[in-house]
Image (cartoon, rainbow, N blue to C red; front, side):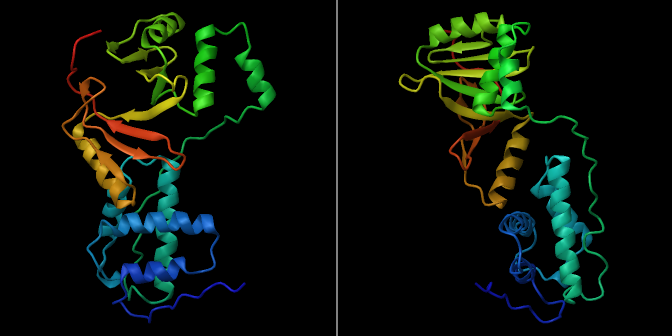
Length: 276
């Protein structure tokens, strides 16, 4: 089967970002590469002037747009976006769409990614670790919860429970600490060691299942920045600005992952309600 060909615009500085991106993505690319390229180019384009021509763009505009699109990107994710833009810029230069302009991406710098010397455990090693009697029961329980839910310790893990009082008793014993907050149908634990923010939500009939995942940020400005970034990337968000959630004024924004897991980004403010 012959791949469809995308028309290449004439060599002129009047070529727009969108037309150039269409030609760039219309090449014979692996589906995964095309998807990543499209996400980055679309996110940056959303923060550039509508219909902007390549010949009118400055290196500063592109750098500022990338920073605004991915303000908290990890080094590897950031470097992947930089590589995409550099490849796109070189493609545009080869076709004469930027005139005599210098490299449009020269203001973009890669970030140093920390070396990861870890490696995945085999199923046998994992079973051995989770059954090691020399490791504290609460640590092994936490590892299993995180493994089964694919959650990470530095994020918020929200679980549905059948009976809140029973769950509070169990997790208080397990982690050796009472809940940081307890309200009707809701409780959360802020465990220092091992680090975990565990949220329990009474939901009869759904006990033991994942309720939601979350990331807490420092300010409402960061929440609004995330809303703008996700919207620019084409993600549908549900904002609850000025609302009370989890018995606190949080200003949460919600986004749903491809597998249906709900992610919450929020900033914690004043508590609401009385302790149960």
